[in-house]
Image 1 (tube, rainbow, N blue to C red):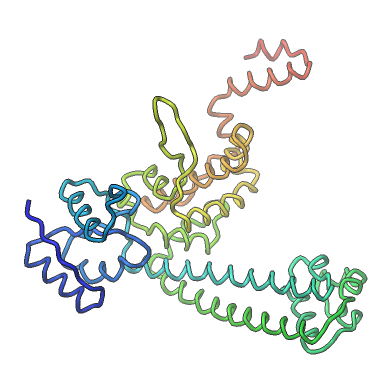
Image 2: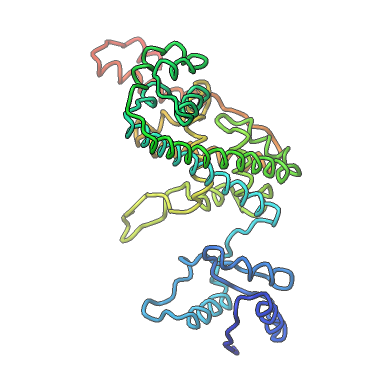
Length: 380
């Protein structure tokens, strides 16, 4: 096997020179570490002419103590030549753009929450207990009071009169909560934070419009996901942005769940399982699915709630909610692959699945409580 090492820069001209050099040597496959965003410029230049294999850096780690860029490149080439690299999932460009939009939206929502907490900090410093009375300081009532405080108003009665909706039932509590020590410094800090929040919310509006435009060609597929309990339009767009709509990229639903990091890891030595923790992967889709799972288990007539309660009793709420999230992703795989809506199995699914086992379990529970149930035992 012939090996030749050459270094190239990362500017567009040098990447084009890299493409020419690879073509001269009749290369058909190119492997690279998929680290951060640094692989993307190389990918965009080479994807039209070569079969690209982006590899997870953790899967192709070299021997410790022999770490240089040249050694890494030679090691990756050797692994590729022997077929030992599993290619990472790279969605089509349209899905990548949608993914950038949904991830940016989530980051901006986090920033709004952070500035909301900073406003709470300023209010506490001024001894204004607005957050103890209102559930949302940035709601209509809270925002009207904050704007009045910034404008120079400090009279508790006048500020409490700005309450709207159900908050007007708490006028007495609001008057007491708004009696504090407001200085010009507090007003300046509140004004700055509110200006940043307004700018972020305007940007979020533009992002939502951009997401809607990018989602237009696959909107029908995304709407299928909203037939599942707990999945909103926003969650559906996040799921589609992360996994796409072409399920042929994943051999099975199990492969998709493993890629998303929603199944226990395989960690066994000497016949003993050392750990069943989930892998640290799929951060964006995992958090979206877990959030949707918490909403889904509130639907009392759903299969997902029954599954959650069944696992929670044995393994705890955290493992149970991950199992529900994995079930939702399994359903999403089949819905996107087959183009079908969600079909809920119902909360009685597990009882129907093994009726006699359920009866024996309940009889034993009654007997443990001191009840005499011989006739029921005979019925089984």
